[in-house]
Image (cartoon, rainbow, N blue to C red; front, side, top):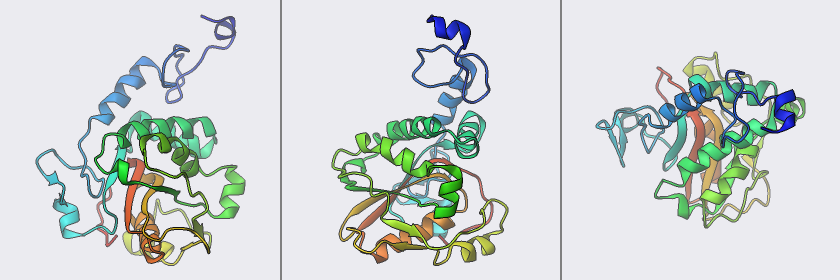
Length: 245
């Protein structure tokens, strides 16, 4: 162990316990095992929601067959719980750019497994309003997006400014479904000159709950000419109220 570790040992980014300095992820053994369990949880390959192995397929799950999604497929790291939830919250609220990079690397490992990853030629993070970005210091979706390029072999790079959030919107967390739709409707536009025509776009965010923000961004990207829009999120959270997306 390095002298620096004896003086100031590394700590688990999720629970704060000391963790070995040579681990790939900044997690203790307990949180590392918990994260590995989250990665095995099945989800719908179309909408990204939790779905059992026998309740979903390429055409979606029971939920998104009833409430069709606007995007063309989704990949996630895991459900919004446990160590993954803690990493996301610490990244957003402390804030810690390094945790955004860790979340991006975890998601990149998942992205590399999907059969559409080699079709992506443009990665677009869900934008923050400029005021919130200044207060936080960075956009966690942009940090994650930078880590995903390695898992998309045809990607030309991250188009961090392709989408613009036109107005500040209240956090979606505590809003009912009807308010969430109104909250984000018309809140995004494609930047003038953004090269989206005919592109296969990967839209990136940290958490997808109701899907309203992702749906509005997808609608905006396709209106601007994107041929396909896929979604990559660090986590999906359970949400009882249905779309529409």
